[in-house]
Length: 133
Image (cartoon, rainbow, N blue to C red; front, side, top):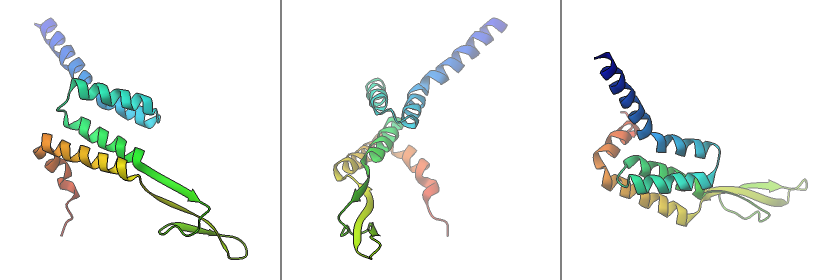
């Protein structure tokens, strides 16, 4: 009986670890900024588990991070940016941030698809964002 219990417990633990492999691999690749590995993990994950809501979250995060831009320009006329001045007060350049529109649209599309695949899970996950009164 102890052997059966031990084997069952070992199997359960190994299956739980295997189930989260994609998330762990994705997180590690993102932390090391290995974009080739991130794309490989996302592609494999989508092929093996096409209806996994966590894939949509991971892909959204990847696309959003990829879309983020910081632009340093010698053009001081960029609206919404920080303008740098020369010692004589003349504008020398600017720095601004934002998102690349095409990648941002792809991130939004991924999020919408994820909500369509698992609508109740998203509502629960996002419920804490509701402001308190």
